[in-house]
Length: 208
Image (tube, rainbow, N blue to C red; front, side, top):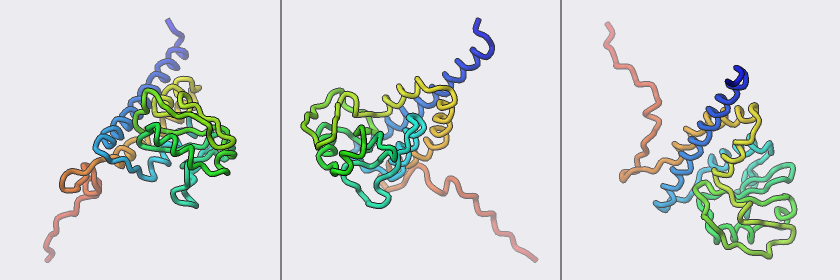
């Protein structure tokens, strides 16, 4: 059989990977439900989640490009080292991807070595996005349109210490993200609210 240490590593990797994949799948399915209902607006937390997740997986330093300039054209996240410029979107149709590439600023086109469109739901099976693109931009729809499936593939190859860090991030943040994605009922009420978490007020008692 496997040595004790080797067996522990296999079990640990499987546990981490399984929980990461299950969590990301749950997020993707929740977003797909919103997309079917026509709710495609995403909170700022979605961008933050993707940035910190990819930083943990890729070792990048992605930061929001919307902090100083709201609704920055083209891209939502940029790597300070110039590796990746990323647009985060609930849906990624060919038209949406093309629009992202067309509205890149000249500065964005030259600042990042790779432009990626990150789809929070499920990306399409194929895309029709042909060049030419803005000077300095190379874009391959087969390689540069990601969803959580691409993240899961990257996770499989991580060394154990990085894998554990990704697992810890996903474990701490998935529940909050799922709450952010809740859809209200007909009365505008959300399944989760503050009343579920606040301490009950003690009953009043008459004094003497």
